Amino acid sequence: FAREIRAAATVFFNGPMGVFEWPKYAAGTLAVAEAVAACPGYTVVGGGDSVAALELAGVAGRVKHVSTGGGASLEFLELGTLPGLDVLRPRKA
Image 1: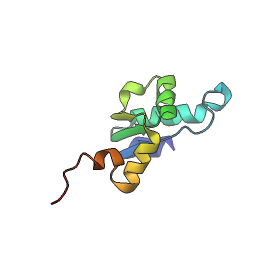
Image 2 (image 1 turned 30 degrees about the horizontal axis):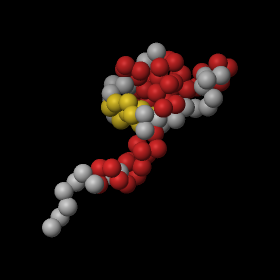
Image 3 (image 1 turned 90 degrees about the horizontal axis):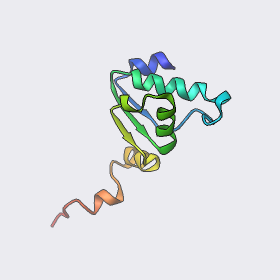
Image 4 (image 1 turned 120 degrees about the vertical axis):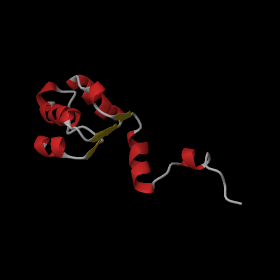
């Protein structure tokens, strides 16, 4: 997976690959985090656990955008908006 991630134009990483907090299960998540950080494309990381994985891998500063709102990020991708954004938009007369 790392080769494909590094070659991607855009990567959205939302969620670890397992129980990365346990050292014997961390390798997959850390490898993905490192691949995302090495990707020259546009990289977005969503969710507190994903951000924690980036920090554990020591690569948090190497992604383009970090959002701690994982669920909200997914909702925005799905719907193209969020309730909090909707109320800020001007209403049509």
